[in-house]
Image (cartoon, rainbow, N blue to C red; front, side, top):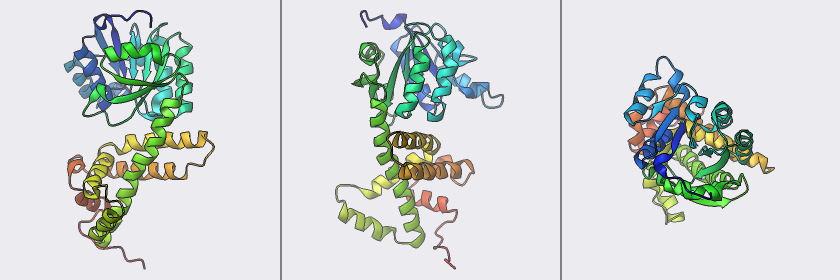
Length: 310
């Protein structure tokens, strides 16, 4: 970027106003941009749309009636929707994008998905930058470490840093940053799924003490009790989003020529946790409960023994 515009002159937009979008919208406003508009599919919901719109207004963010309206006139657009909506979001925003606008794609999607989103954005004359968020957005928010990629990533880096992003250019080639993120996710979300399945089963048989002791002996560098609490908590809080991310991880594995046996199974287990929460078997308050209570709730019975195999 030849000249760096002053942050106060920038108009920003956020597509997707869930947890991440809200954090980004707040951060951009606090950074002093001229304006922030936002759009989320939930805004259109007659029953549930009022709350996120009110939340946006409380932060000084203007709710828009469509993605195209939100990005209209915006200099910087941050897309933070669920992984399976990344392409749809780019398509919905495209009519409102102007030449030179910077479209920052934070979605956890496969390299192929990012390439398709980039093609949609570049067709409008706007500039597409893929971003891979390398750890949980809370508590660092917009300063969470991120990798960027694509032909416009290097030029966009100074502006993104001025807006508060902590970004490192991974490659000028699209898909590299996302490949790093997706491969990492197979391990991170896989650990969550493995621990939930193993420890919930151990709890059912009353052998969690022995299992924990054995794991501590084999892997002495990892606090399994503490890690279990964290893994269960993250899955209960964000199981649906994690499941969708793992579906994209499975696509990434398949794009590499492998059958995504494990990535698909991890997505299924994360989705299972999300289903239990939506069915009321797991409540929001249990997201911060000790993992044993969460495991018991997942089995639907407190301190029940193993099922009779016969």
